[in-house]
Structures are given as C-alpha cells and as structure tokens.
Length: 491
Image: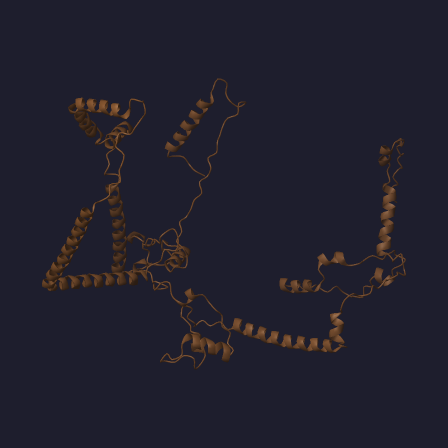
C-alpha cells in the first residue's frame, strides 16, 4: 500500500488587494477541468466497448518477425497516413451543443455556368456548348502538335544555314528567277493562306562575312607537333615585338622629344618664347622716334593749333569728304579702258586655245594619267571595303582587340589530358567570338574605386602631450614599414 503523503497546511495569504489574487493556488481546479475536457474528447471507459479495450490473444506460439529491407519499409510507410496530417483529424468526442442548427441558403446571384452546361434550356446555352466543344478540339490538336514537336529533336539540322520560305512551298522558286520575292510573299499570304510576319531589313543581310567558327591553331593542342608549336610561338613573338616597337615609337615621339627641366626653367623658356619679336619692334620704333624727333614736335604743335580755333571750338584734323562728280571726259576714258581690257582678255583666251591645240598629246596623256589614278583609287577602296567585311565593326565606344593566343611553353607540354596545363577559358573565348561576329559590343572591365576612409583618433583615447599630426605621421611610417617588409603574411 502506497504511503499517503501528509497534507500540508495551506498558507493563508491576505487578499485584500487585487494584485494579491494571483497568489491563490488554483492548480487543483485547473487539473480537474483539464481531466474533464480530456474525457469529453476521447470518452470514458464506460462509453467504450470491451473489444476496444481488450485484445484476445489466440496465437499459440510467437512467430518470428520477418526482417524487411529498407525499400520494403519505405513502401509500407508510404501506405500509412502522414503524421503531419494527423493534426487535421477530428478525434474529439464532444457533441455539438446546438443539435439543430438553422442553415440559411442565400439566393445565388448571376449565372450558373455549370448548370447551363449540364442542362441547357435556351438556344444560346446549346450554341455556347457547341462553340466550347469546337474550341476544345482545336486546343487538343494544337497541344498534340506542340508535344510532337518537343519530342522530335532534329540533330542533323544546321542552325547556321540560311532558309528561304520559297524552298518549302513548291512552285514559288524557279531557277530562272521569274518569280520575285514580293510576288512570292503575295501568293503565299493571299492565295495559299500561309502566315507572313514582317521582319526588320537587317535580318536579311549579313553584317560580317567572317567565319562563324574559326578552328584554333594546331599548336594549341595538348600534344602538338614540333612544327605547329614552333609556328604558334613565332606568331606570339612577332605580335609582342610589334607591341614593344609601337610603345618605343610613342615614347620616342612624346617623352623623349622634351628635356627634363625644373619648373622655374620651364616658365623662363615659355616667357622667352611668347615674347619673341616684341623687343625688335620696340627698338625700331625708338630709332624712328629719335631720328624724327624735331619734326614730330613741330607737327604736333601745328595740329594742336589747327584743332583749336580762336573761338575755342574743337574740329577734326582731316578735312571733310566732298562728293566730287566725274566729268564726261573721265567717263569716256573709263569706258575706253574697260573695252581695251575686254579685248585683251579675248586675245589671251584665243592664244591659250591655240597653245592647247598644239599640246593636245600632252593634255591627253595628263587625262589618261588622272583616269589611271582614279581607277587605282577605286581598286584600293574596293579592296579596303572587301577586307572590312571580314573585320569586326565598331559597335560602341571601344574597338575590338584580338585576344592573346593561348600558348604553352615546351616545358609545360604534358602530352596527355590528365596533366595538361589549362591556359584558356571557354566562356571568355565564346564571349570574344560574339564580339568578333558583331553580336556584342566590345567592352572593358570597369573597377570601382573604393572611397578612402577617413580615420581619426578620439580625444579620449589620445595620449597626453601627443598631437594629431604626430599620430598621423606614426601611422604613415608604420604603413610604409609594413609595405617594405616582404615577409608579411596575408590571410
């Protein structure tokens, strides 16, 4: 028999204020209510039958449980309901407190499409059903065609091959070219009912005649021949020498042309260059002034006397302009001179024509030479235009630059794919190919400059007697020492 715990005496607490009510122990009441709700949910022993409570053991001997494989266990567990769905099952035995509920059915607003489809009563219902059935048939045909097209993957089709719609329609393309493209479009759209979509004109002509795919140099192979590898190395060396030569030329015509001078010497030379010729003009003016000094003084005095009259009024130095009309004799002389000049020009032209007749052969030779020069210029321009068809166009701000060739040195050649040293990037190679074929505009990698963080030491952390300038100098010296130290480990 279990020992009965002695009842402890309850501690009496003052419940004068409302704040003291929560100190009351009501655990026994809550436990009773929880047990009552549990019985309402699952029921009591009196409500259940004996078959639900007890199981009759009819087995004579225990049968050894068969071992199941993990696959069989998964199949058995798949047939059982999921544990996550058990929370949705209603296991409560609590009866509805309102046995007879008043269920109000509201009147339905609008059309009931489902009822009209199942029980058509009006002609428009039957017509709608017929249209719906016809639409469903067409939709099924369209989906079937789409599924067939997805299933059939034609791997033998050349995606770079240009197609002409006239090849698919018999009778629209002839060898002699009697049927033009606009006429073929008219026949295909209006007479045969084919769908015609208007596309941009740039889709019908090539922007470049370069090959869509260029095979890499044989020397780039992981196991190249000696000749191919040497040719590739020579190409790379020639290109690098050309770049070095161009850099040296630019340095020679820019930096090396000017001597290194101090800023004071540069300012002095600039002042001398800009004041070139000013000293000579000043000296010549001074000499003239010295030679004609007395005459100028007399002239200045006379002019001052002329400008000021006895009455004290101011007048201009130059005399007023008068409108002098020409006499009849002067006009006749002027006309005679004009006629003589015209006759002289006519005689000169006749003389030039006679001279040109004499030198017809030389003029013809000059014309032939000019025609040859024009023909040569046309040929050069035609060659340039033909060469530019195979070159990438300038689509943006930057010009296309040919990437560096991927080459392995002789000591890096492995001879097998397992130990080969990779020198190229497939994504970068395809990207450059699109730029070369005018599909993408050439671009340059842009790196954003990080803003410099301004660092300062708080006054509370500053050592007494040390200024901010001293701290800044210390920090710079420490940074330079760390930069000069090559044994620094970066992690």
